[in-house]
Amino acid sequence: MKKESSPMKAWLLLLFAVYGVFGFSGCQAGKAVVSEDADAFSSVIEEELVDENLATDEQGSLGRLLLEPDNTQITFQGKAGPMTQSGSFQRFSGFIDIQGKDPAEAKLEVQIEMDSVKTRIGLLTRHLKSKDFFEVKNFPTASFLSTSIEATDELGSYQLNGRLTVHGVTRHVKIPAKIQIRPTEVLMEMEWIIKQSDYRMEKATLRTQDAVPITVTASIPRNTAE
Image 1 (cartoon, rainbow, N blue to C red):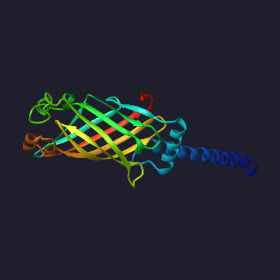
Image 2 (image 1 turned 90 degrees about the horizontal axis):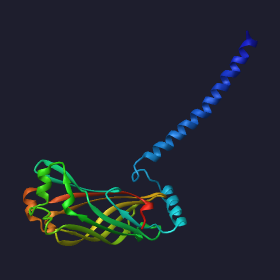
Image 3 (image 1 turned 180 degrees about the vertical axis):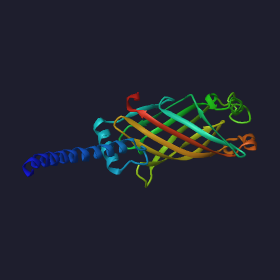
């Protein structure tokens, strides 16, 4: 019986050895997939940014990358009493001009067609275009033009300084942003609050909360360079 069991033990040992090797490799591959699918800004580590910046340096300047509705979303949230409604802008154009590998050296410009505002409620959408809010017939566009971009202490985070024009009023603003340069795309995320009263929209504040959160997210392919 002992001689017959030896081949069986050998096969079992071989099977466990093969399973151990491929099983361990599978676990490692699974971890890699999870890491790649994680949020672009919350999961990024310093080594990844260094590698991407080196790749950018080898390929030269990115140039002017176009911001379009296909790769960028501009949204806001308005609040009236206990009710909160979200909206967005469907037509806009702009660019981020990155002549080096450092986002702090970039320039950003955006032009928004205010008539393209959209919410889930048709009546609300029409009201936002009226004199009570955006008054789109007299002020058809809003715009942002950066004057400087400063790196912060947090890796991948910046402060955009620039001029924001809404409802015919231009104000200097400071916008926190996360910018990441990848081999095939540039990722951006901005979130800040504007006050309607700062842009002569006092009628709007009689109906809605003055402070309005604005969010801009973008995933811009590097092949959009002009």
